[in-house]
Length: 187
Image 1 (cartoon, one colour):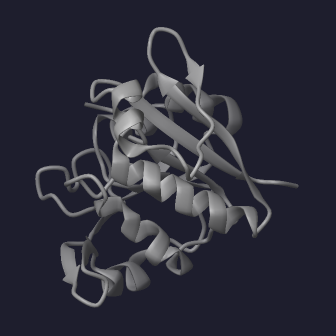
Image 2 (cartoon, helix red, strand yellow):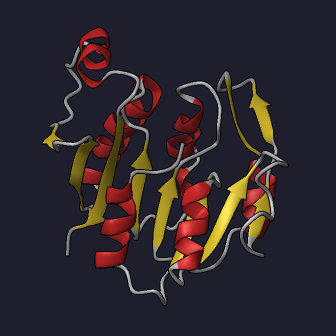
């Protein structure tokens, strides 16, 4: 599975090919971005995907953090190896059970958050919760939820809302749909 074409289209429309993209989780979308001329840094824990499409991989194993009862990338590796400058963060990893990506908000202070942030796979409960938490945090920092779409043959815009019943969300979105959210700094 790879990221929805709508994400690629949005990136092509809004970011010049001189832009640097910091990607959490590498996949087929990485190859598309590199082939389009973007500089991509990929944080990756899976040896199968490391060093596959470019020379800017950051090898960061998943570590269990008992104080937070969660798994996420090795933060010491991230502190040492994150690029100094990037124009977009694309959260499409780490791979794993729904919710493993919520480490992104827990350790968001490691990242330059003054850039566009794209969250993929928001049709999954864990990623939906990540978006809700990011939406709350980022609106206090001058961000807005720029786009929140489900990628199907007909596009529907969903307004994220903390009161949504998780079971109804899954019934509505279904497991075969790809959904994503884009946060942008309000200027």
